[in-house]
Each structure stands twice: as C-alpha cells, then as structure tokens.
Length: 342
Ligand code: KG4
Ligand code: ZN
Image (cartoon, rainbow, N blue to C red; front, side, top):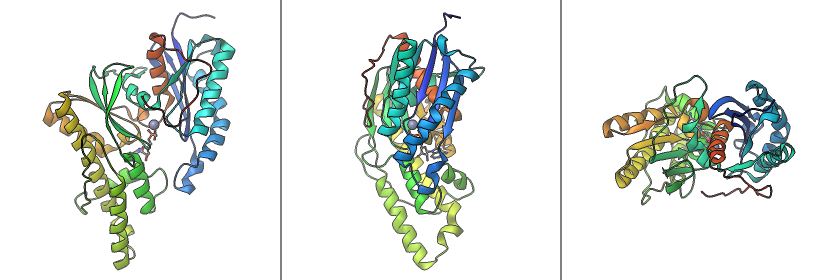
C-alpha cells in the first residue's frame, strides 16, 4: 500500500546505544533504544565491544521501531542516520545498514550530524504530548558525554558554535569523577541520584578561568582527585561516608560553570530564548537551575523531555525530516566521520 505521508526511519549508532525511530509527518511514533550494558564493568565505552553490540542489535531494533509505529518498510520515504561525530566502528554499523536499506528500497538517504540532532530534539513532536518548540534564533547549551557547546541556532539547518570545551566534556567530567569515587559507568545519572541526598555547599571546588564562551572541565576532575586523595589519606572511609555531599558539591560546580557561560552567551548575543540538549540535560539540578535563572533573567527556557535527552534515534529522524523537506539528500558514497563538524 502506498501512502502520501512523509515517513522517516532514523538510525542512531554513534556511541553505546543502538536506536531506531519512526517519524510520520513530523510526529514521533516509535523510538526504540537498546542500551549496551557490556561497558559497565570497564568504567567507559570500549569501542570494539560497542561495534559488535550494534551489529547484534541493529536488525531487531529497526524491526521493533517499524512495528511499534505500525509502518511497513515499503512505505518509508527516506532513511536518516548519524554520520558523526562518534566512534567510527559504531558509526559504520549504522551507516552501512542505512545505506543498504535505502539502496534496496530505492529511497533517499539522509546523513545527520549527531550534535545538531540533539538540538533538533526540541522539534520532535511526541505523539499525544504538548509541543512547544523554541522559536529561532535561540541559544542551545548542548551537554553530552563527548561535547559541551553553546550553539546559536538560526534555523533547522543553520547553526553556529559560539563556544565549546577545550578539553573534557561536561558528561565526561561527571563520568570520570564518578569513576574516581567508585561509581559505575555512566556515572552522570548516579552522581545526580546521590546529589539529591547531599549538601551541595559541603565542599568547594575551583571554577576554571577560560576566556570567551569556551569551557574546561579537566582541571575540576584533577582537583577532585587530589582533594579525595588528601582526605582519604587522613580518613580511609572519607568517600563512603561523604558520598552524597561529594556528589552534590561536584554537580553544583559543573552546573554553575555551565549556567555562568550560557548567561554570558545570552548577554553577548542578546538572545533570550535558551534551550538545553544532550545527555547531561537529564540532570535534575541543571534543569532546575536553568529554569530558575531563566525566570530571573526573563528568558524563554526550553528543557527537553527526559526520553529525548540521551542518545536516541527520534532526534535523528527529526533532523532527517527537516532535511527531507529541504531535499538535502546524501550520496551513497557518504563516509561517516568520528570528528564531524557543523
Ligand atoms: O548525549 P549522550 O547520551 O551521549 C553522547 O552523545 O555523549 O550523553 C551521555 C552523557 C554521559 O556522560 C552521561 O553520564 C550523561 O550524559 N548523563 C548525565 C545524566 N544522564 C546522562 N549526567 C548527569 N546527570 C544525569 N542525570
Ligand atoms: Zn549524544
């Protein structure tokens, strides 16, 4: 049965989540994510294991996304996939699958930048939920495991990075500090959980002095490490007895650094519509602090739905939908890039 609807299949495989989603006329009907637990015991993502898990997951995940959305593969209008940035082996699994399927079905192939897709998650209309996307232009604080960026967004496809991290990303800082204090990977959600029970003023950590709208988080990681080494030398059970306070204090430092820079970006550009995106946008303290700051500064703040914060193919399908409307199709010879820029 042929259909006049625009139906996009999105595929995400940039890191350790295999995901597929279906969007019909801009509305999300399915968003299936297979997490890879295999990395937990290593304290971080092991690239080779990630590629292998993607290979095992991709067919069942795509099959489930199509069936959840009640879509026959022959009715797809186009296939959108992540072509970077990310782990090359992981990207190759998703891109090869997307290319083969697009070729077999003779439909357009659309490559999507993962970081732009995190931002465009704000335009993912969830079936049955209220939809209130930001208006252009807006600033997006994109905070993930691999990136920390302040982006000026002028349109679905026109974006400019105004500032970014010069070393570790915010999510990376959460994960590395979590590892130091003995929490499993990914540590961000666990720090978030313990922080809720702790005193964020218990310990003070320095803020980096980085010019302009750029960030640095590797110094914070080192200062937490030295602080804990010093304290555990005096009291061997310092971490276990102060876990909640350590998490709350570290989290407050990261959140304050992020909010200060986004405030500076708003003052510099005069833009008062501010959005949050990326895996770290699931952090409760960051969400609350941005809302509070927005109230004080009279910003129009946009916080993503929890299910669209961390990696998912819904955001890839959304980016693909807008590129499809703009007829931005890719060649079958497109190559995924680990360090893809905007
Ligand atoms: O966007 P994402 O799913 O993957 C990348 O593109 O990197 O982000 C993953 C990152 C990880 O570093 C993870 O620890 C962090 O997001 N994260 C959080 C929370 N949930 C996920 N960090 C702090 N608090 C959270 N609740
Ligand atoms: Zn991501």
